[in-house]
Image 1 (cartoon, helix red, strand yellow):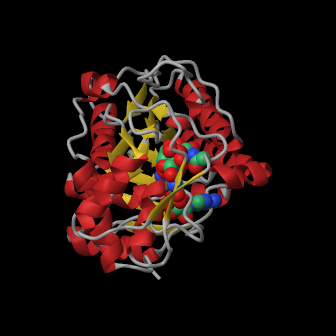
Image 2 (cartoon, rainbow, N blue to C red; image 1 turned 120 degrees about the vertical axis):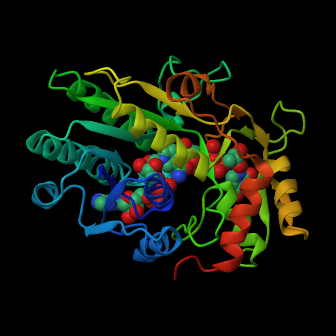
Amino acid sequence: MTTILTTGGAGYIGSHITLELLNSGYDVVVFDNFHNSSRKSIERVSRITNGAPKLVEGDIRDQAALDALFASHKIDAVIHLAGLKAVGESVARPAFYYDVNVAGSTALFNAMLKHGVRHAVFSSSATVYGEPEIMPIEETTATAPVNPYGKTKLMVEQILTDITGIGEGWRSMVLRYFNPVGAHISGQIGEDPLGFPDNLFPFIAQVATGRREKLNIFGDDYPTPDGTAIRDYIHVMDLARGHVKAIDYLLSERAENNQTPIVNLGTGNGFSVKEVHAAWQKACGFNIPAEITARRDGDVTIYCADASKAEALLGWKASQGLAEMCEDHWRWQKANPQGYS
Ligand code: NAD
Ligand code: UD1
């Protein structure tokens, strides 16, 4: 069996990737300290798949814990998701973000070097592009992150690219996600944000269950057809399938040694906040209260991927549309109004 380590594998995206890897015939070891996740996600993945990912609890900055992990499991490749992802928190606590996201990644790469594991996929973010003027965004678009979170992601991309270039048979890939949303069709696993949700889908989901009074639509004076900002939302299961394709690629003869291709994972289609709100109401079958408020600081008008490289390199293309994203996110939230707790 080929064994994949998912760091952060108990989290929102990691749990869906873990599930999809198991369904694709891989063995999976999850490494997570549950800073922003629950063991229940992994219990549920086991239930859904009839597979059993191994779970190792530990902090990604703990070099000794990582050494022990690699010493006791035969790992063939790593998908590195563990980290912190809240933009606002990264501005308030930059040292914490650099420590977990950057120092945590170098601890992981050091352990991989020591134990001869040479295949890594890194979870990066489209946020590394900053505020580009030309849409859609290609992988060659200049990077210019505007907050500490985005800067940590770009630094780790560069560190991994340098390590992969050393010439010992390393092969890596950087995946830059656009806006992951939705949930597995079972409704058993999904996004469970701690505290106040910053992002659109989890916020609407909480309004729909009555945890929040109404959606605030941040600005309707953008230069778009309906005045609200446009994003490239991608179903988390499409994203998970993209990771399986990335692992298949790195473990195949197609991959080139010492290279770290960068690949956007998005649909290439944008939807406005008003379109998302309407799709959610259709998925739920009832009215979701909303009000137009001021723009949110730092928001851009439109952010969409050129997703053609993923198709050319990996043979992967997103297949799920906005209706499925809302229906699946709603199925999860309705069945689990308080998330995993
Ligand atoms: P998440 O918070 O649900 O998952 C991250 C996981 O990492 C959690 O399970 C958390 O407990 C774990 N973790 C945090 N600190 C850790 C530490 N010190 N040691 C070990 N584990 C630790 O977030 P997610 O949305 O699933 O994101 C996963 C990855 O994808 C992150 O690296 C994030 O930056 C990246 N990403 C996410 C998005 C998004 O919109 N969700 C977009 C682009 C990129
Ligand atoms: C956020 C992150 C970004 C990350 C991306 C992908 C911030 C500031 N940025 O960006 O780093 O890469 O997610 O996950 O968190 N909106 C509302 N009302 C709300 C929430 C959002 O109108 O309550 C609007 C926003 O103004 C935006 C759209 O919905 O136009 C999407 O917002 P969000 O889900 O936060 O994603 P991004 O802004 O793309």
